[in-house]
Length: 294
Image (cartoon, rainbow, N blue to C red; front, side, top):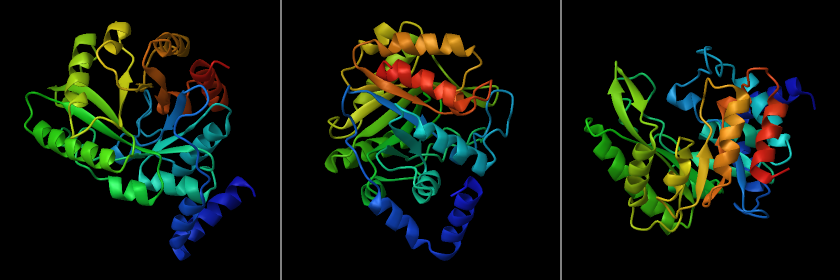
């Protein structure tokens, strides 16, 4: 089936047979979250649901859903790519395209803090919750936890995050927390990427919920990463993020951080899906090699 035919079928199923989504998810061939070398390489695609469509200097780079899906399916087809992180719309599109068999699927939970909004710090839970993740047979969930000591919306996020961690633990569902110390600056949110700030965010995130048994961390690569990783015993994946650095510098930083104790892999989205030279497969293959040692 050609790409055009696959997308035509996707549109038709969404129009005339919404139940096909449940069928596709139920039929998905699953795998353990961690296997073999104990490493994970996850491609992230939950940015659009928070209104974050930009990559580098192109503010609408992710706006074409068909282009995004082509990039995602290509990435998922490459050796060493373990799975995808997405909101329900992305996950369901990929399921209908048959791209999720044998892959880890991580559901994104809170996308309510829209980029650039006056309520950006109110990171409400507008995507997956634990019951829907279990219903859809997801392998893990993920949430964003930005802590702003000068914004009262933070306390609501902390409380709801604690509830999500407790529910995930009760369901024995791994939950990945992506914490930051954040602040308002010139009308926008800026994350503090110093080692001290990341360590503080880890301390806050790690204590949320009635049990940390199924809690993972998703952390940015920052200076003094060795000291950062000494602040937690929780399994950790590295956050790739969108960066203006040269690809060689980015890969070098990831490679060094992946060697640290407690680091079990990488979660990257825009950096690999929209590389400067446009070669998605090559960028993904380099990252897979860093994670799995190919």
